[in-house]
Image (cartoon, rainbow, N blue to C red):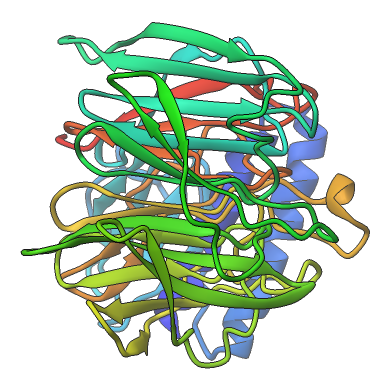
Length: 435
């Protein structure tokens, strides 16, 4: 229970840090109401609440406190750990402080500026998000495909990683509206790279549309080829992953959305043939934010997505390759669930990084709240983490489609939202995973 409370006040602290940019009186009211809510949660879960007094001036130790160590400046949240230690989030110190309950000695448990991974803005696509969009990692870079809506142009840009960690567009192109191949990129566009020259695409479908388009793009010849249609209709719940086997390589996919049952499929590349497999138990639908990733450990990992437009789910599961079964895992930590822009990316080592995307209200996609939540899943420990991660620099939501790419030791994020959103919709950010 204590872990839950600590998680709760840390998320409140992040919100407080953003609100402090506003006028002092407004921030004070938020701080007061936040502490009141925290105290209520602690009482409900049987966790002690203790007063914290700010440090006076430049002194190392508060005149009203005992013990030694760092002095408090602007304490915000407080909780008690399982061993009895008191932990305090302090905005002024930009850290979490652990206090010995007997001696009063204080040590920094987590310095947010030093320990947390940080995001750095590295570029812009020069276009904002659209109903059909996706980010795909390739060799030494990544691709971004974006179509604003049906019967509009398709923008494509390839970013190459430079030696200093920066990126630069190595090429751009625009395919005109009304083209025959590839047809429109629509809601639920998903892609997977074969680690060589081929990028495979599910082209998605709008809610009432019957569509099963499946294409491959050849990077070396800049050409598109139509492949066998998916045996089930596509939609916002599409997801796609490439798996290289010892003798044969496959693609695995979710197709569908809330208006129809979703299907889990396997595509035999050598035969241009789809086959149906079992979906995870209780996953009748996949929808906005559905994602698949293959971390080369014998499993596929999946987020269900919203499941229902007005009822996002945090469900997370893995599939034992090549034939199953599915196994339910600890759900992603966002209690609001996964929605538009939900994404998974493997770092090539121990972690799967994830964003939960925009989480919806029941008034339709234009009213959905945006999400900055960011997580990673420890493949060795089998648990989700977020304490050491910096929240996303820009809100993600509104449109489906993967937003993450891993290149070497860097994680890249494309916002891919409307231009009216905070950050402008087209920013690209980088996180150094080798720190």
